[in-house]
Image (cartoon, rainbow, N blue to C red; front, side, top):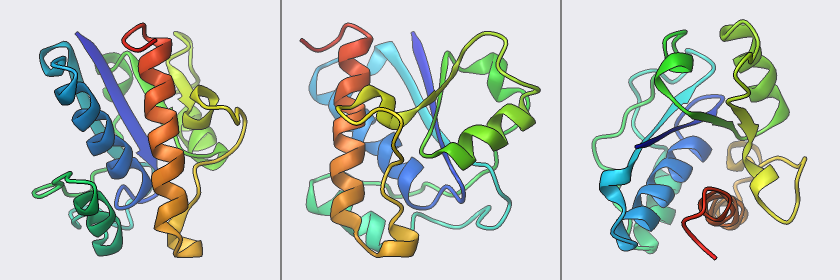
Amino acid sequence: MKKILFVCHGNICRSPMAEFVLKDMVNRAGLSDSFLIASAATSTEEIGNPVYPPAKRMLEQHGINADGKTARQIRKSDYAQYDLIIGMDEANMRNMRRAFDGDPEHKLHLMMDYSSRPGTSVADPWYTGDFHATWRDVNEGCRGLLKALGYLE
């Protein structure tokens, strides 16, 4: 089983979008039993809050339900629990390296490194309001991730 944790600052926009997009992709491919997929925050600001309404609406427009998801903060134990821990931007990566005392097993990756635009950030709709750009980035990153893992050609 491949265990993947997506991480952003608050766990109410980008990382839950990535979580539910990837869950939808693996479900459609009949691979749900092969994956454990979750998301978390680097900060405590939104802990317990649901997916941000515009992010939830964007998912729903694509037939994806995120009901019941609430924000949680990363835990030191996440490093041992997950095979891949994927940040949405460099600030997330720095915060994860700090929280996990580095990355000795090379589990931390930037989401867009699985896309045609490696080294870039997933568009942050919290500041731009552009949930379409975030959807595009998350979709491309998730498809690239599945391809890198050998599940897509």
